[in-house]
Length: 142
Image 1 (cartoon, rainbow, N blue to C red):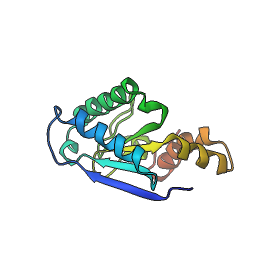
Image 2 (cartoon, one colour; image 1 turned 135 degrees about the horizontal axis):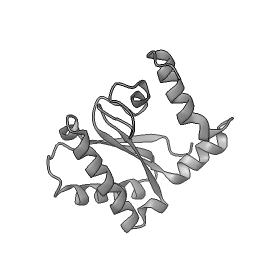
Image 3 (spheres, rainbow, N blue to C red; image 1 turned 180 degrees about the vertical axis):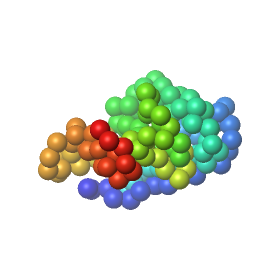
Image 4 (cartoon, helix red, strand yellow; image 1 turned 90 degrees about the vertical axis):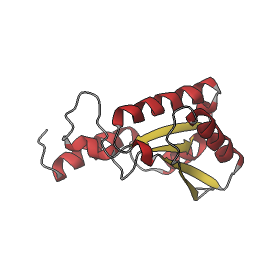
């Protein structure tokens, strides 16, 4: 990849009111700094509250769409208590999106496209393979 530096930003401010401004600032900075290929927005104040994290994630996606940032970036979501809709909390598949802290991963779409072009195999099957691996490693049968 052309841009190989990763940006890590920890947001300790515990306020939903401030989030739109902070999130927009990060999108602008990631856009303006070509040396960064990706950015992790770490939200430790949401580590214990998955539902509030989902609210922040929805707001973030809305802000991206509202300002056409979704044409340049995509979001990936990770949380210590991540749980896919329709699953039980202890299902191994949820581990694919778990992390030590609540975070939003901002990826530049052009960087994702480059990575997909270099990947040998079907990228669409990666999530399914990851879930199958978690099930195998942590004991859930298909």
